[in-house]
Image (cartoon, rainbow, N blue to C red; front, side):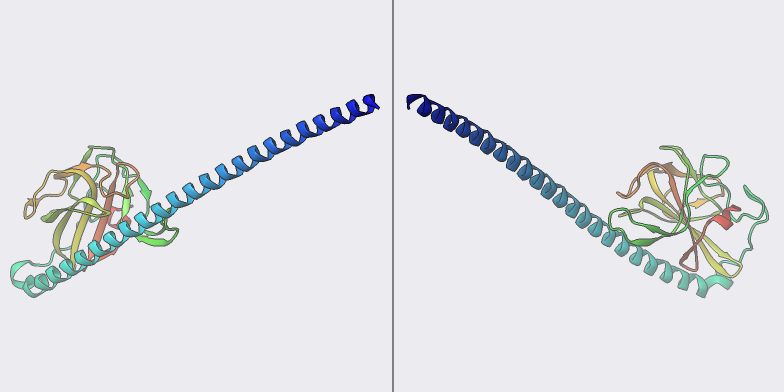
Length: 236
């Protein structure tokens, strides 16, 4: 009888040990699951934070572009009223960095290299398609940025999205208002109201604006206050 009791006790102890090990394993597994859930929640919160920040940044960019559009429209209206007496219409140049180009190369990189074209592109965080209103040109950090054509510096400003930018008014060309913008500059080398010549230094390339992923020049062309694809006007 005693031998039987010892066997039963041994079995009971073994079962208790197995149960304890199983309990510990279950607790460890639950802890891992809880950790994974917490990690996923943290990542999801971070993603939501990035989306909210991107939405806020984009709203600022949109507001800045609306204000710029209003300013350009007002300026163009004034120019149109004074064009005949104060600013005769010029024609597109026959020379430049490339045959048929309206502008000389605004970058220190020769030949001009486009890294992102004009047109619709996917916003990586918001996952929405938006117009890229210029072309991104290779220009390393702190390399010179040049005026594409004779004109007057209309604006030297810092705005959300475009960062440090210079806007140049080139007057009337073929009966239309012609302006250019040079975005994401690291520093300025021209002042508002300054007359500049084609190829004159106006700033240095950078990545300002909060949405730029690296140093380059975002070059924009405005005709009658509306952006157009700059590539043909650079002879590309």
